[in-house]
Image (cartoon, rainbow, N blue to C red):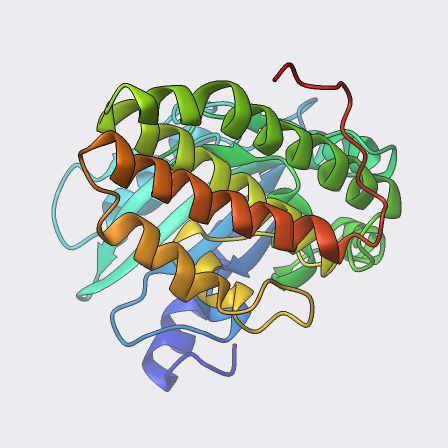
Amino acid sequence: MRQLSPRQRELVSSLVERLSAINGMKAVVLGGSHARGCAKPESDIDLGLFYSEAAPFSIQQVRELAEAVNDTPNPVVTDFYGWGQWVNGGAWLTIGGQRVDFIYRSLEHVERVIAEAEAGRYELDYMQQPPFGFFSATYLGEIAVCVSLFDPEARIEALKQRAVTYPEALRCAIVQDFLWQVEFNLSAFACKFAARADAYGTTACLTRVVNQLMLVLFALNRQYPLNDKTALAEVTEFAQAPQAFAARTQQIFARPGQSAAELAEAVNRTARLFQDTVALTEGRYQPRFILPM
C-alpha cells in the first residue's frame, strides 16, 4: 500500500470495505505493479477477488458495486471464467479517473497450481493472453508479492508461505524442458525458415525461443515471471544471465533481415544466447535426443 497516494489508499480502503461485504468473498488482495513496488502514475490498481469454488461470491453483487462506483454506466463485469481459464474474469473500472481492475481468482485453483509446481509440473496457455500466453507459475509469483487487504480465514497467508520459496522441482523442469524446446526449435525449424528467406517463419521461431530462454533465466534465478512488459528489463538485474542479454535480444529483433544470409545470422545470434544460457546450468541441461544433422 505504500506506493499508493493518500487518495488511492482511500479509494482502495473504500472498495475493500464494500467488497468484503459481498456474499462468498473469501479474500481481497492488492496485486500488479502497486504490490510489486514498480507502479507508475498511470498504472491501474489491481484488486484480486478470491472465492471458493464450492460457494463463489455473487457476481450480481460485484456488478452492482461496479455500477455504483464507476465513472460511466455499464462497466465491464464478467462472469466467472469470462476471460479464460487463468485470468478467469473480473471488471474494468474507472473511478474518479483512476483505472481499477477486479481480477477473479479461485482459491482451489491456486492451491492446485502450487501443488503442481511443487511437483515440477506447469502449464503454458498460449490462448489466454498476448503475447506469450499465461504461464501457470505466475500464480505463485502473484501470491508471493500480493498485499492482503481482506483475509479473514488466513487463506492467502497460507498460500504465501508455500509460494515464497521457488520450488526446486519446478526450477529443474523448466530449465530442462524449455532449453530442449529452444534447441529443437533452432535446429529443426528456425534455420530452415531462414534458408528459405522466410522472415515471418524465422522471426516467429526466434520470438518463441527468446521467450523460452527468458522463462529459463527466471527459473535459474528462482524468480517468478509476472509481467511480459517488464520481463526483459528484469533479466538485466539477474545474477545469472548471459552478458547483455536484453541488448542482444533487442538487436536481433530490431533488424532480423529479409535475405537468407541475414536471417541465418539472426538465428546464429539467438543460438549464441541459447549456448550462453546453457552454460549457466553447469551441466544440468541435457538434450533429450540427438538431433539429426
